[in-house]
Figure 1 (cartoon, each protein chain N blue to C red):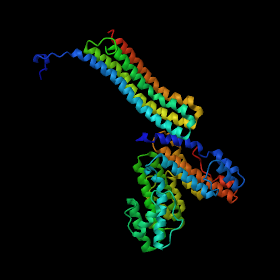
Figure 2 (cartoon, rainbow over the protein chains, first blue to last red):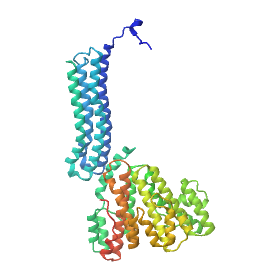
Figure 3 (cartoon, rainbow over the protein chains, first blue to last red):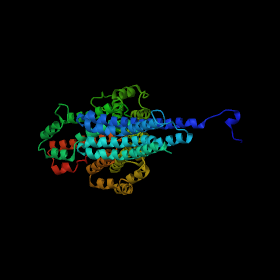
Length: 172
Length: 320
């Protein structure tokens, strides 16, 4: 089959104009997927926290901290989205001049988007377990924080790689 | 969906702090008299004002189910625990109608089906308002009792239907602990029937009718062994997952009953590490039943002034 040539029809399509579209898509995905993961996570831990507080209101402070742990991915996603917007000519910087650059921004946002969503849900599961731990052994609160915090490591790593990539693309 | 029980499980975890521990049981055992035991229970928040032992224990059972009703509207997973009560009430209803005796204080509280509905269904001979499997068993038991006047045969039909419902409920729940509990309950029921039938010299036909098929015991081999002798029955059990049951039965029947309750505790203890699913709720109900049963043993021992050693050998393992 012969290649379809838009230019042969007299239609001139500037593929490079799509660069900013893909860059914006990356920013949106980072905020969207991180936010979805955190919403699910904080919802799950909220249910567990409410269960504990129903029986023992004095544990509110402890379970609140554990409830909020899966909320950070949403914040990281927002940060990546914001930094991207300041680089691609929407809130500052310059719009990507080529399609390849736009795709690079999209790729740079994906670690935060994907890891943010997945890690928020798994961190929520660890937090729910830790809330059960605090319900039975409030004196073990310090240890109970560590288990869900371990999952945070991978969200932070994704945040780092996304930030480093986004801020370096402009100089390519 | 495993996440629908997150709130409920968190509440159960908090309530588990109030379950009786081994130290609490020791404290009850250290009470010198029956009345002192009742006072200690009252201090721990047991009962609802009525100082009699039966009222205290009934109030605790009621509190447990009130708590479960508060946590979930869907009691389907708990039917595994409710079927024995329902079938017991059904037996009472069938016998009361056939013998023409007005039922008074014969129904157990806390079943899934209203005993008055059962009574009406049996009186009218129309079982369509009962759950399907229960209706078929009730119909068969009612007509068998009318025709043969054999109360034991009526019991056998309903007991077998109860075990079949338990097993089906456990399988359909898709929850491991419910399936395992139903299987254990069915196997224990078969072992008890086989032992009693063996001791009273029942026929093979009776055993075939009474033993419910379950996954961990072969009903036919169990019936063959029970028809021969107790030693043959114990020899068969020793090659099944219930080998220890044979040893306990050789020791005494109360040792066997303790073994059964302790196996249930072993089964549910892993739910302490499960923050999702209905498993921890189910385990909590069983743990409460276990502590009520333990308290009943202590109270009954203290009331009859039994030796502490004799009471202690009957005490069950605790959940916490």
